[in-house]
Length: 143
Image 1 (cartoon, one colour):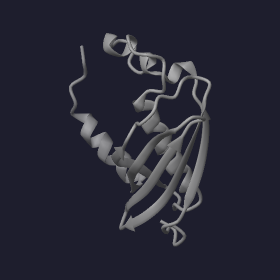
Image 2 (cartoon, rainbow, N blue to C red; image 1 turned 135 degrees about the vertical axis):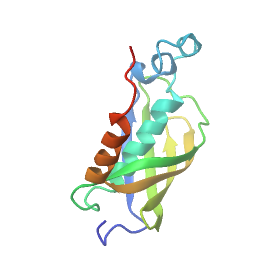
Image 3 (cartoon, rainbow, N blue to C red; image 1 turned 90 degrees about the horizontal axis):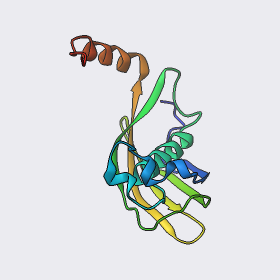
Image 4 (spheres, helix red, strand yellow; image 1 turned 90 degrees about the vertical axis):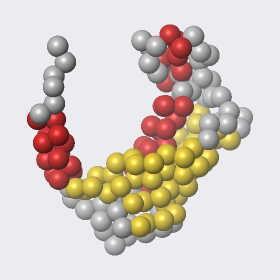
């Protein structure tokens, strides 16, 4: 981690919601989802929040470092239909060792859609891939 990785880093991400990021498209094999209205799915909203937090970290990690999401505490307060723009604002509010805590707010053209916090852990990509390889080496492959 670079010395510049300190609280108050911010990012703003704007995203126009496409039809394929709505609830019926989240898990098309699950009829519970496919029967729902076409509004931004919470699962995709979480991914957008993660992306915005990663963007705030651009230029502040050492070579070979990445971050992984480790905790999500977000509301989903309003539906966002396809075609609307979502604006996600994130701010790094705490750095505790390798754990980074972000404050998050997302708005669409009509309302606050989401607010809360998201935590990411700084990892060594090489060390992570080594551990993952060891974990999957003995895994039973599906038939």
